[in-house]
Image 1 (spheres, rainbow, N blue to C red):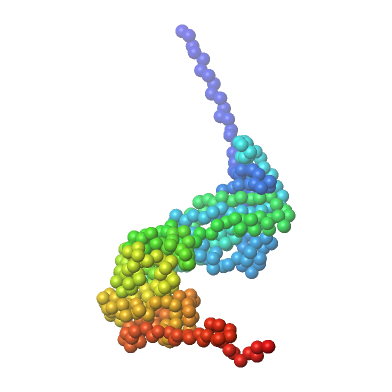
Image 2: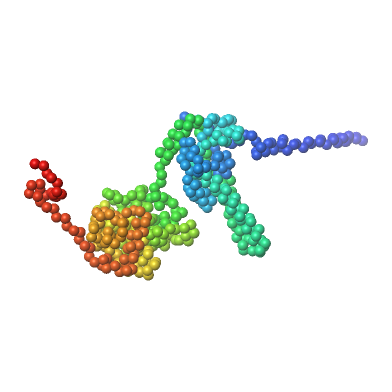
Length: 461
């Protein structure tokens, strides 16, 4: 019989438990250096680093702009603008913003892992204390806005949690507690966006004060701002702008709205700019001084605003013969501006405000407004004269010889209100025919000819 030897079991190997430091390394909060993935390249001859950071990381890395201190090579920060941006990023889940541009006086340590077409990919690192050397070239209001947003969320979260504790004491799992929990969840979503979504950050290496001041000037001079006309077309978050697209096919406006500029004057073939159409839509729906609040933006329907504006434009065509001629292509906007006050977008806006006032506050029907505007029509021939109703019954809003009212907000309000009051009071001067301006008779002097006026001057021999 063969006996198979049994292997003697080996003693178990004692495993040593690694120390926490060996397992996780130095906690990031204690690390002396900041390390981030980045690319490095040249921009305008300067070494430039590009990083993708969250707004929360930017807030922790870059000094918060102080509205009371103007940084070298930059302009004063406007707190209201930063606060508006903070509100935007908090309330708009689909928010968007351009990247920011920083400067540093010297290059950082950069560990390159690859290079493609002049772009080096790798890891940038610098001592934490060197973060004070990072300065904003472009993006002050965005950085301050993110700081305000994060601080605002923290403040609102603290208040909500306090309210939650109180609500639970009154009625556990009640409606109040449920509403507060929804509010807290929304605040957490806002914070998550600022801690997870990323913005491009460029850091240029530049130590010369004159050079980075020039960099800021170059950015400002080469940036093209967006006009109110283009904003009226593209910003669909505003109910006015959504209504705009429903109104521009009206017979009075079709192909007569300048979609690229806020101006429609002089020899322009346009009757209005997009901004002006938006102002008329607002005035016809909310009044000459009306505003649309954030809550109303959620309630108002663009089709209702568009319908109101379209009815107003219908009245203009029916009540004013020159506007009908424009709608039919018989009179150009340029010629309208030469002969009628209706060529002024300010005057039309004042009429829209009067239309709203009469319909909403004085129980006028649209037919009554139309008949009243027909009475006004003869008085809208230009220019303004000393005998006309505008100089005699609207204080300091027109200038003799002019073709439009003054553009100050208060003047537009006074004009619109006056037009409405005349209708309510049935002003007799509106029913009366326009008074012809006085005729200036030029004397013909036999010695000096036509147009000579003797002011008592002594003419030498």
